[in-house]
Image (cartoon, rainbow, N blue to C red; front, side):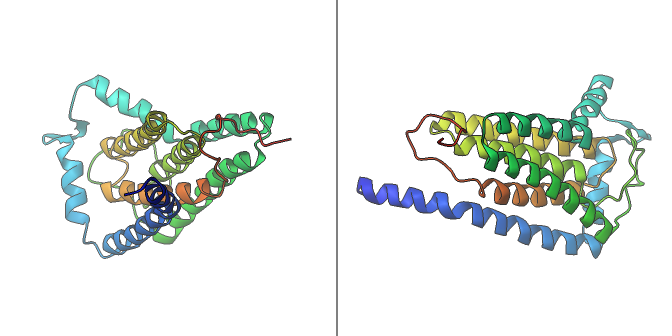
Length: 234
């Protein structure tokens, strides 16, 4: 394959993979929501939650005490307080750097994701798990997981934006891996703490990822070879 053809193929993939990812995530979310509402996932959800607790005491999670404490700390990374504060810090930084488009994208992504998340909860009104004791306090409906969705929205939006302004593959991979890793840990913590069914978390990941990728693509990228700089030309 010639260099020109390879470059053309790369540009084509870069242009269309976000649309494919968003479409796949939305389709899977709709399918999963339908399965959940019909009760088709109940057996799997219950089996996973029970596997993470002491068979003799559903209030006792498996593992040492430090593991429970660690997951309680990790789940805070998906709270509205932490994500809201992080968003304000990042938006402020981008505004100081005069990258208004990126700042607006981050703000709208997180705010829009928050509204969408709680709107979906009102639509589905799925009760929280009652199979095991909750290790943290919860108040809203269960589907989809707001922690999973909002962590995906925030961390993946920031990761995708940073990756778009970086040429080096290693740094792109690192940034995206950190964003995905944080999102994964927050979601797993919700299952371990007994406050969400596994399908709640998976649905939150799907919805959050779709929203994040769509929002991140709204910011124009930069030409390869230019230094990383979010400041627009004066």
